[in-house]
Structures are given as structure tokens and as C-alpha cells.
Length: 105
Image (cartoon, rainbow, N blue to C red; front, side):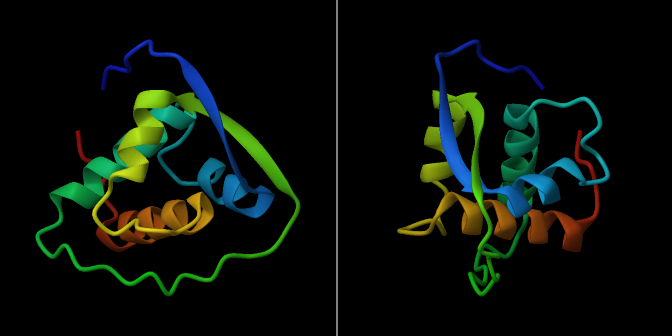
């Protein structure tokens, strides 16, 4: 997966969400950009596009992660996003990944 060398930005998420991202089984040495792009790719390849936003977000201290502006725009333009926080969006993408459990090349 190629990452555009665009200007970077930060997004604020809960530390607990960051830990979940870091502990996904495919993560290893990938950047947050690569992880999010892969999660979005898996989501977009699903046939059924309706998705539940009933994921519970833990309230914990927040932190920031650095991603490219292009990746942030892609996150914001996902069809289920609307007015959800980045925490909720990322947790939903993680749930989709866990249910599909495949690292799509």
C-alpha cells in the first residue's frame, strides 16, 4: 500500500482506542496511516454497507496520533461517519476488521 507524502495532521482519540489500534494482529510496524487505510479498505470491500454505530467508546484520557490530511479526509468521508467522533469511527472499523478477520492485500 503506498502512502502519499501529504501534509500531516493530528486527530484526537482516547488512549484506549489507540491501544486497541496498536494491538490489532496485523499492525506490527505499520504507521497509523497504513492501519487506517487498510481498515477503510476492508470496510469498503464489504458487500453489506449498513453498519451499526452502537460501539461503546471508553472514556479515558485522550491522546493524538499523526496521520496524513488525505487519510483524515478519507475517514471523514466514509458513508457511515456523519457526526461521529474519530474514536467511534475507528472502533467501528476495527469491529468490521475483526468480523472479517482477513488482511486484504
